[in-house]
Image (tube, rainbow, N blue to C red; front, side, top):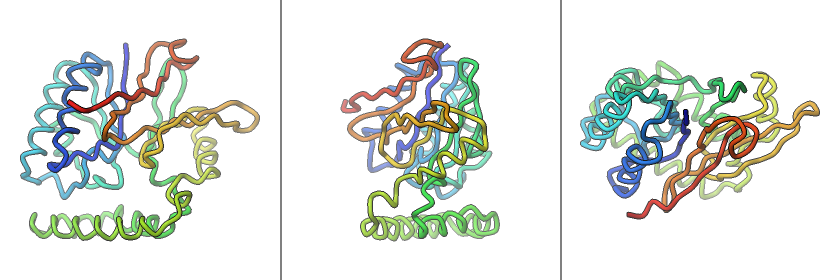
Length: 248
């Protein structure tokens, strides 16, 4: 059976076309899939599982209906939605995946990541990431009222945009040596991630053997996914990077 991998939809009430495109994806290409993996930044921002925004409730309902039809659903944290917890996953019928995670497709181990931890040259972001993944920091934030959390999230996002506008493009991309190192650690020849918004298939060589890094695209004018078919489809490992227009 076919599986799908997506990331970086950045669902937000200000982008209803992307939400509609995602629902169409669930009901169209991804309908009846064996599994759907969402590799982070599914939402533009996440302030806690108790968020009472209509978008959150509707997305959870759509995903629960989807998973109830028999598709295994997996969610991984991104740098925008690292506060997604077990409660929301349960409402969706999903399993939270650690970052990174090893899966097996067509008899081959594949490493799945969001991708932000690979951008080690961005020292400002890496410092924030370390703070934001601290359980005590998260607990303190989640203890605040919803309205205050919304204000804090907006401030963090504005600061991030300001900092990113001053950074060189290569700083915000993955560090090649970090890619090779983590693939060595997990003994894989295929890595799939999102985060950088630079969709492509990158051939690599690790210890004299061929390898590949597949980067998912962010959803905007186009949707992006990796389709996992049978061995021999779209290459020896059955992995195909696909995009399509999202305009309704």
